[in-house]
Length: 345
Image (cartoon, rainbow, N blue to C red; front, top):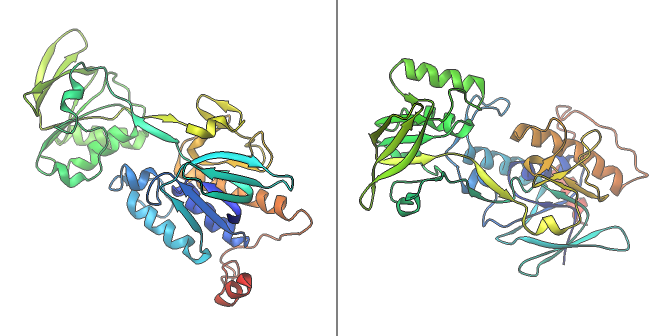
């Protein structure tokens, strides 16, 4: 049996930052993740994707962000159960919880923080009849390594942040980038929309709107896509790769059977206080939760983790008064080597 103060379900950015915030409160953490390494989607799906809204980093690759977070929380010596999925949860008479994984590993904690991001997920695929025949043969739903597209012709379809960000990023790598969206308006960040427009005006991106990709051209490998523009005009664009970026279809998996209040495949929490679920002692932070005004940003997950840890401390030590200090006061919030030694005794 693995015992800890806070058991974190999900070792993505929000889960990793939770370790740091809990460590400042001298609370021990253990993380469970179905993936074989920490980092969540940032490590598994888009380690080379640039992220632009992390404070103090005008731009940072998703994989590098994971490395920084691991470095930041390393001093608090978190435990990890990787490559296993949290399967069941049982509340004990003393108020603690036992979470068992699909491989039978049991974990006991006073607090459970679900930071599972989107949960398990699969890419949303466009309704193109022959697209399955070209998967991994020029059709990719996720960009893992931008260098794979070096000097290649690329067509990206979509209107959200991923489609915009990758279109911008690949202009310096691919020989040509074409962005296709079924509307004239994009759903992504306004700054990214402006940047794409600037690159289009400079002749570095071809943007076709409103239009949709209706078919894949090629024999055994993608050589082009069939595009239908509003009004019925149909034409073919030569390309080496077609990348439809329509987001991920999330699934909560076994967590959906834990008795939590679910709304649109997300866990409802009390954002007015501490991001606690309808079950006292179980919190949900990051993309996995929902509340009025929710924004699915890593930045928001960090904020939620901070408030959650404060609430967790009060639940674990109801009679102990904690005075919040700034982390800049002589490093007083970070455990010294001596304190770590004493904590283990």
